[in-house]
Length: 421
Figure 1 (cartoon, rainbow, N blue to C red):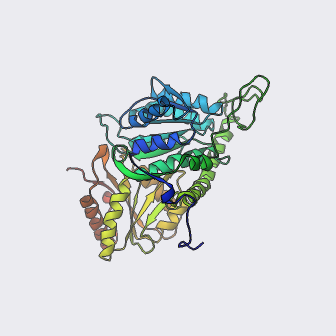
Figure 2: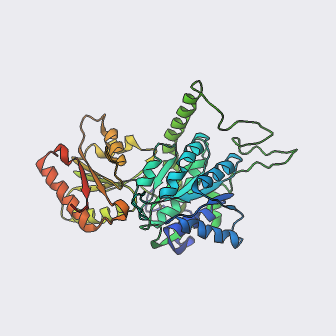
Figure 3: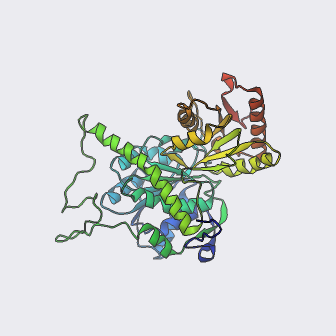
């Protein structure tokens, strides 16, 4: 299809421009997604999401069962119970709330329940901090959740709707978390375009098909749901004779999720005219780049703006934004990075005693390549510290010097960007 001839089903003139912050955008997307149950517990900077949604409930704009619970552990437990009966369920949290919820995250994925959760990423205590970094997200990296990181408020809206489609896809049937940087996105207002309700209804195929709980009649549209007419067990005791096989089925579902994320991203493009790379990664100026900066979340905007200035000076530098942290697109990453000479991976979280989580995934992706770049790990932005254009400018100048030298000393492989000595 000629790109000049392409016109989405709902071009901008058929969409509605709104001024919302990231939390409000997630709440609005959830409102349009025909959610049956929302379980809510407040924690900064996530609270606005469920506050706004509770207003939709109170105003009669949605027919959702809104459950105020006593903790984040209970919030996910309520979503697990709801999703197990065939309901579409949503919650949101961050930081210490996510830490309290971790036990139940493994249960949600182990039961193959398509729950969607927004995480407004925030630093973990101690010391107490309410601002954004990715340390809470890294708590859940092995929990079996699909994890999508967004760059801006528009993407937070778009990805929340996409998350329900991905989670409920018959080839996936896994929970999905949508990650937006605390305060940088959760409390920042942007103009964004939202679809009319009927477009979201069409994209999602309406509500999740609920079983009709009647004594003499059961609609079997949700196959994997608690239903007295079709008895099944969820979360039963599984020793070594079955546990291993159950977990490998989760692994296979996560592999299949890569293809589904790509497909849903493309369908969203046909619907709205917006796409985010291939859905897994979003590259910029990568074709001839000698230096590549790998980043997740809202920082990508700052990095890209500075890279553009260096490009105008003839410096061959590019940006690779990782959108899908789980499943991690190893093959795509390796293909895009193997021709580079120097790669800097930016982790917005420290891993004492090891290296950054994103860095480790990137170098493992490149391990089997015969020719591969030098890869450096930068830890930055802890506790919400700003990644300023000046810092990115200094980072690229430092990388240019490394490239000229042709090697990086072992003690310089992990670096701390913007920390006071």
